[in-house]
Length: 296
Image 1 (spheres, one colour):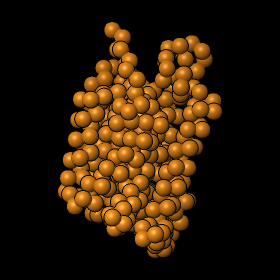
Image 2: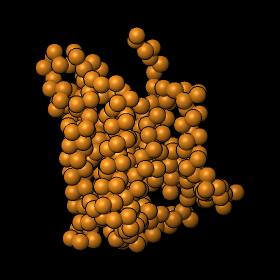
Image 3: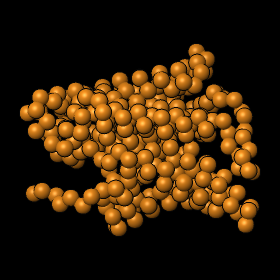
């Protein structure tokens, strides 16, 4: 019994590390959807760019983890704002499908643009953390696992604080509630949307660095599956709801870890999408979503 419990706890540690990365990416999806009702499918590829930014400064300039994380977040934020201004802003009043197709186009542009710039070769992340392994009651966790969890939690708290207590956050809440009314109240909607993309993309950039550290390898197509899984996490928590994205990410990470722990690691990706199908059938609004009748 003790052995099973120990294995269970070990998988929970692995799942929390991965889940916290999914949660960070899911937050970007959720924020953007909450404000412009757009599912930004290029979000996973912004994460990939973040991973490469972290890789460049850690391998070439020998920066340590925190400066690399900060650098990746800042550049990803700028990239997110550029994508919004160039690709999404002209389509703000277009049909949802036009915006969605554009998002997929931006995603492909980043992936294959990435291949042109850095080639399709798989790169290895440098060991940014000491190889210390802690053993607590037979459960092994690496120094990196602790840093990743702490980093994710800190970023999530910062986001929650920003949304609840800052001027930008209040503007975001106003725009997501009623864009036209916010405009009449003197909220600069364009800047608010830019800020949302900046914050969401910064979180994706941070997730990219963590992803590189977690899996040790990066490549230009690495953002596709985590991006889709984070989308599943956002839908699971209730799309447009910030705490929902965090919970959804952690649930997904834990589910994957337990599926792998049961020896079915080839089913890991399938389970994520099975969850999506089940959520859409059983409770389409997600765990935290309220049933809102669509106004005609």
